[in-house]
View 1 (cartoon, rainbow, N blue to C red):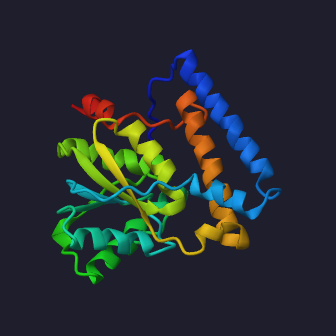
View 2: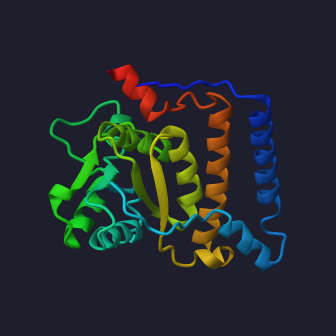
View 3: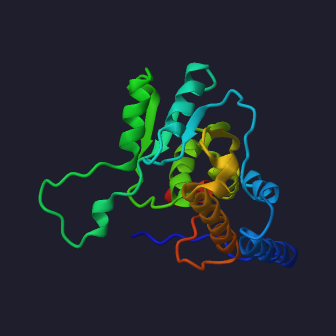
Length: 240
């Protein structure tokens, strides 16, 4: 697996701000089940960014084969004329996790479900771009792959479509790995999220997101996970 890195030095003020945010996240997690329900609602709403859609060069769909909501929202934006193209990463090739793979063995990628769903809603195949990204096992690597393609195409704005609970982290990552291209973050439907504390699925989504945001903040401090992604512009300069 390719190991890529970024500049890892931060000013003292920025480092202090990140550490303070991390402490806040820890406190939020600690009190999550010990506060009134209206306060629990604030914890979930803090995760959501839902901008007004704007005309853009493309609609970027974040992968999640477990729900069709993102695909449906992206198709609606396309049908409304907000962008002429839809783009997504291919997703991690899970066969790479195995030591040996039988000859001719095939396994669907995460993007396959999105591709099928978009075409079933009338989106022409020629308007869908799947960026090859066999090592994209998380949102950061996924957006880095799409970001490099966006830089190559000289795009200036994209619509970023993902689940409501994922929107703030997705925007945070995009701004870090593709700083030169404006993103407008649009939330897809996420049933039950407004009352997440009343269901196991909702509790899992909120707890996971606060943990994942913590991971993203640690990536900004330094190479804690050995996989901090460089910006799309840095990667393009290296490849040119």
